[in-house]
Image 1: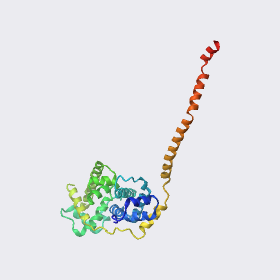
Image 2: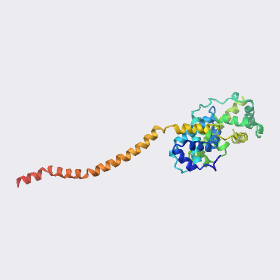
Image 3: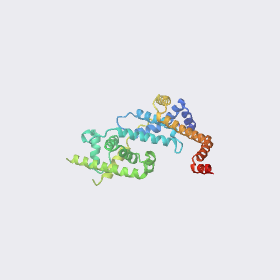
Length: 195
Length: 97
């Protein structure tokens, strides 16, 4: 990120005066931040570049609303996260989670998680992540987001609250409910596995 | 399920170990394309409407005050005239004397 070289207030001022070169510099400066958020919340079947572009266009449209109360990168992160939530909401949820939809590796990982108490093998990390995404896909957009931020990215409740605009109590309640739903899903999978 | 939390955490820990894509630079032409599109787009109608509405409201308020001040004397004078004209009792007494 070219954070050290960009004079952000001056650049924002130029962008407000419709300076295209300044707008390009701003996009280049913020791209790493935006793409990291997009990649960690990317709704399936949505190209990351399209979603990043949508976020940047929203940022430019709302630039007049930025009053400098928070860091600009934080303000942009919030736009990115809410755009991802909107995309996730628009996505249809899978009607039912089936063992048959899992790859061989993913099924092995799930079987290992359900039946043994040992660690998942290190070389199954990719399959674990894919499996985790598939499980989270069964939840509502907000539930998915809160568990992803809390568990996978290990963010604090305060950080999630800042990023999403939800108050800390709501973050905790959502996480609690999401875990409840996930627990039911695990129970169902265990029953299916036994039968 | 007794061990849901530990099972979930085991899966999460394993998933966290998966390599992430480190490539973070914008693809060639991305920034130029987005900047050109953003700068060529007109501001949304509602934003423009909102901006002009506020200005129009201020102008209308000022015009109301100015017109009220300019016509204050005329209003006050006409009220006095009306009071004189619409006092039939004093008119009768005046005529009788």
